[in-house]
Image (cartoon, rainbow, N blue to C red; front, side, top):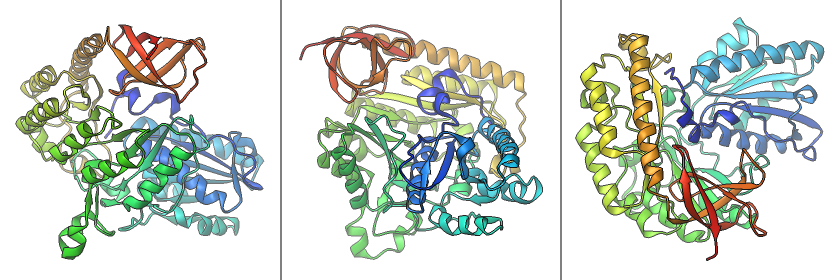
Length: 485
């Protein structure tokens, strides 16, 4: 799925961090690891797992690629832009390798399985290729590479969740952290390659999640985001794939923990921490989850709820598992149970066979929901997806771009309206750090995940919760002033 990214997309997949190298930590060993990450937050979270595994093998991280013994790129197959960037980076690293022949280069993540032959044998760009479920095998693979051989492991797992690996948080702001709760995806959307690159859904033991969350709290973190391709599908019944749940014993079924149950457990375990989650799928989000959010003050009132299209016909072509009317009904229940909830979306313009009437239905759905913000793309094929193999990409580029621009314009209108509703309110903001534009201002987010900028006063610091009265806004940002409790 090649998608055009937009400015509003930055809240989910921040362009400013694409290709960011993990922060240097010179004390962690004699060999130096340089690792860049691309794509979704799952990849950035996985890079922390990789750094943890390799730290035990004597690798310290560095942001200076010229001193690295091992260079790894954690890759994305969802975004064409990231894929092209990775190829350019690999070419750049190979030029550096000519000066330092002992340096090893590897590709991790979602591009690994699909392009392993090209990277290893045809283009000879890398020494090792490692898929998302094979990071524990890195020490063995690096040993092979050190011995002069190429190394590859892209096998997908039915069990791997890295539950016992404590991620290295050396690149964190010290305020917010991501905690992976599931891996893989069973929703075979026709435009998406994730089930083929990350495998089938399996969930992580809730006790290991609670242990990680408590550890983060002890280290001073104030906010966590529970992370998965589809968090609503979380289901722990002792291990194994979600699709095999029906084969489990009655005892296992009776003691199973679903996502609503996990939210309750985490919220009660760390009542002083903010809890977010990403990403949800409409067909899997239950009222039980909505009530769990409403029940706990420390679970943020924000849901990213991708819809992709407002047309039931196109949703069926996408194999989304829900239609327009079902999505409306979910939105109605959400607004009733969590009246002050912020909602964001993903939307694709120009999916195969999309007509002007289908496009108008997308715009009318947006008018009904009035999202806080959205992530908007135009469609083109991603290799190995059902759509690429079976559907003709029959909407011309000019039409795609025009429809996308209409979607963006409407979303900007709604984003401004939604932000204006905050003016005059006093809201609790978690300080994340200095504003990008001025070190005289703080930036932080409210419970709806909207960025708030306000002048520094007093002796506050990142990680503090403060009360801010909202006085102004743009389509993307709220502005205000701190007030006393």
